Image (cartoon, rainbow, N blue to C red):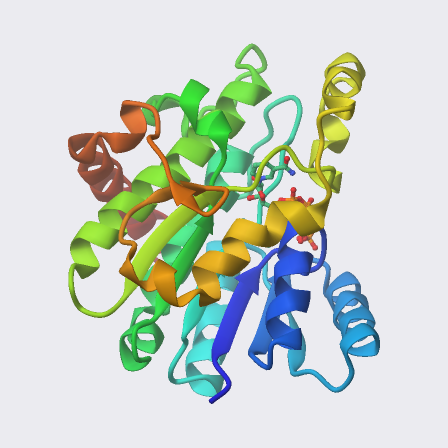
Length: 279
Ligand SMILES: NC(=O)c1ccc[n+]([C@@H]2O[C@H](COP(=O)([O-])OP(=O)(O)OC[C@H]3O[C@@H](n4cnc5c(N)ncnc54)[C@H](OP(=O)(O)O)[C@@H]3O)[C@@H](O)[C@H]2O)c1
């Protein structure tokens, strides 16, 4: 039977590759990003390449918590049982920027937006048989530190790379704590590092750094491989709370394996979300 799969950030880069492969496999895929026209164009390209596949584009801004709630309500109505939730959307902003809700942009979109979306889709995941949550983290988590004081304090002197790394560490810790919380309910949660992938996400990296990395980038197809594998491989069903690279669970940084930190981040995120969404 076709599985229902939701991919955030599915209109370009790694997410788009995951969407194309999973839709071509016969799954019913929804891609959700801010730019609806770009998502519709991506869906159309995938349809043209793979025939009459089931792929739908929807608008979602993870940086706007009200929009996340509205989007989740539509999903709950449309798909009572969600088999795979791929939390992939992301961005790198050079020079720290803030969202309208006051959160620093990268932690606000990649961690808070995805956390809220997962909370809101819990019933859909619970209704599916053995639902999988797959999170696109990054090796950049290794240079990240969780500093709640910086969550809502954009600071010109604060390096963008540190903010990105903190958000990717938060993705990893969220995955670990979610996995612990769902336990043996049938739901699994795992995250992966896709490799250094040539996508639009690095447009704001300073030019010399981009040049330095240029030769080492892999293409999106390769970058998407482990995420696709986590979403569909029977072997991956046994994984819970893992950080996966090239289809293998690997060690993360010490902070990335710190379950006390994961629990504190979860509580802090819930506390802030309660305030940010209280209206
Ligand atoms: N490329 C790499 O080397 C690399 C390495 C490690 C991890 N990653 C991770 O891989 C994921 C995908 O990135 P990518 O490299 O494929 O970059 P990409 O091509 O720029 O894709 C990013 C996606 O996120 C969406 N997005 C950004 N802000 C959003 C928001 N506020 N709400 C909803 N969607 C939003 C974008 O669509 P819209 O602009 O339409 O919203 C786009 O579809 C990210 O989580 C990134 O951190 C990438």
